[in-house]
Length: 117
Image 1 (cartoon, one colour):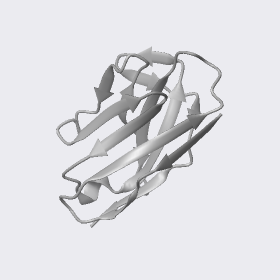
Image 2 (cartoon, one colour):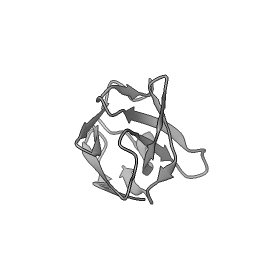
Image 3 (cartoon, rainbow, N blue to C red):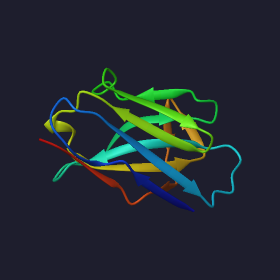
Protein backbone atom coordinates (compact mmCIF):
# COMPACT_ATOMS: atom_id res chain seq x y z
CA UNK A 1 0.00 0.00 0.00
CA UNK A 2 1.32 3.39 -0.95
CA UNK A 3 -0.10 6.83 -0.30
CA UNK A 4 1.59 9.85 -1.83
CA UNK A 5 0.56 13.37 -0.87
CA UNK A 6 1.19 16.46 -2.93
CA UNK A 7 0.14 20.08 -3.09
CA UNK A 8 1.88 21.41 -0.02
CA UNK A 9 4.02 24.53 -0.07
CA UNK A 10 4.60 27.95 1.39
CA UNK A 11 1.86 30.55 1.28
CA UNK A 12 1.06 33.83 2.90
CA UNK A 13 -1.70 34.12 5.46
CA UNK A 14 -5.05 34.24 3.74
CA UNK A 15 -3.89 32.07 0.88
CA UNK A 16 -5.17 28.71 -0.30
CA UNK A 17 -3.77 25.30 -1.08
CA UNK A 18 -5.24 22.07 -2.36
CA UNK A 19 -3.70 18.86 -1.15
CA UNK A 20 -3.99 15.65 -3.11
CA UNK A 21 -3.32 12.04 -2.21
CA UNK A 22 -2.81 9.13 -4.56
CA UNK A 23 -3.48 5.66 -3.19
CA UNK A 24 -2.13 2.51 -4.76
CA UNK A 25 -1.94 -1.14 -3.82
CA UNK A 26 -5.01 -1.14 -1.60
CA UNK A 27 -6.81 -4.45 -1.84
CA UNK A 28 -10.02 -3.55 -0.06
CA UNK A 29 -12.95 -2.50 -2.21
CA UNK A 30 -14.43 -0.26 0.45
CA UNK A 31 -12.31 2.11 2.45
CA UNK A 32 -12.17 5.60 3.78
CA UNK A 33 -9.53 8.29 3.59
CA UNK A 34 -8.45 10.81 6.15
CA UNK A 35 -6.29 13.89 6.47
CA UNK A 36 -4.22 14.56 9.57
CA UNK A 37 -1.62 17.16 10.45
CA UNK A 38 1.23 17.51 12.87
CA UNK A 39 2.85 20.79 13.80
CA UNK A 40 6.32 20.94 15.35
CA UNK A 41 6.30 19.77 18.97
CA UNK A 42 2.58 18.96 18.81
CA UNK A 43 0.66 15.73 18.53
CA UNK A 44 -0.80 14.60 15.27
CA UNK A 45 -4.39 15.75 14.94
CA UNK A 46 -7.28 14.74 12.75
CA UNK A 47 -8.34 17.27 10.12
CA UNK A 48 -10.89 15.69 7.81
CA UNK A 49 -12.14 12.41 6.37
CA UNK A 50 -14.22 11.06 3.52
CA UNK A 51 -15.73 7.61 3.08
CA UNK A 52 -16.47 5.50 0.02
CA UNK A 53 -19.85 7.20 -0.42
CA UNK A 54 -18.30 10.68 -0.12
CA UNK A 55 -19.71 11.25 3.35
CA UNK A 56 -17.36 13.67 5.04
CA UNK A 57 -16.20 14.90 8.39
CA UNK A 58 -14.12 17.99 9.12
CA UNK A 59 -12.62 19.11 12.42
CA UNK A 60 -14.48 21.96 14.07
CA UNK A 61 -11.29 24.01 14.20
CA UNK A 62 -11.07 24.19 10.40
CA UNK A 63 -14.56 23.38 9.10
CA UNK A 64 -15.20 26.96 7.99
CA UNK A 65 -12.03 27.00 5.89
CA UNK A 66 -11.23 23.43 4.84
CA UNK A 67 -13.19 21.05 2.66
CA UNK A 68 -12.54 17.40 1.89
CA UNK A 69 -13.63 15.57 -1.22
CA UNK A 70 -12.98 12.36 -3.05
CA UNK A 71 -12.71 11.67 -6.75
CA UNK A 72 -12.48 7.99 -7.47
CA UNK A 73 -9.93 6.53 -5.12
CA UNK A 74 -8.18 9.79 -4.33
CA UNK A 75 -9.03 12.34 -1.62
CA UNK A 76 -8.44 16.06 -1.77
CA UNK A 77 -8.21 18.69 0.93
CA UNK A 78 -9.06 22.21 -0.13
CA UNK A 79 -7.70 24.72 2.35
CA UNK A 80 -8.62 28.39 2.25
CA UNK A 81 -7.93 31.40 4.44
CA UNK A 82 -4.79 29.70 5.70
CA UNK A 83 -3.27 30.99 8.90
CA UNK A 84 0.17 30.54 10.50
CA UNK A 85 -1.40 28.07 12.96
CA UNK A 86 -2.13 25.82 9.99
CA UNK A 87 1.58 25.31 9.46
CA UNK A 88 2.20 21.58 9.78
CA UNK A 89 3.05 18.40 7.98
CA UNK A 90 -0.15 17.10 6.44
CA UNK A 91 -0.66 13.36 6.14
CA UNK A 92 -3.06 11.30 4.11
CA UNK A 93 -4.29 8.01 5.55
CA UNK A 94 -6.44 5.11 4.38
CA UNK A 95 -8.53 2.81 6.51
CA UNK A 96 -11.32 0.24 6.47
CA UNK A 97 -13.36 1.55 9.36
CA UNK A 98 -15.56 4.65 9.37
CA UNK A 99 -16.56 5.78 12.85
CA UNK A 100 -18.45 8.93 13.66
CA UNK A 101 -17.30 10.81 10.54
CA UNK A 102 -13.71 9.71 11.21
CA UNK A 103 -11.64 7.28 9.22
CA UNK A 104 -9.63 4.94 11.42
CA UNK A 105 -6.26 4.82 9.65
CA UNK A 106 -4.49 1.62 8.69
CA UNK A 107 -1.92 3.12 6.34
CA UNK A 108 -0.17 6.48 6.14
CA UNK A 109 1.54 8.60 3.55
CA UNK A 110 4.85 10.36 4.10
CA UNK A 111 3.28 13.78 4.38
CA UNK A 112 3.43 17.10 2.59
CA UNK A 113 4.60 20.27 4.30
CA UNK A 114 2.36 23.32 4.53
CA UNK A 115 3.94 26.54 5.76
CA UNK A 116 1.91 29.70 6.27
CA UNK A 117 3.65 32.98 7.01
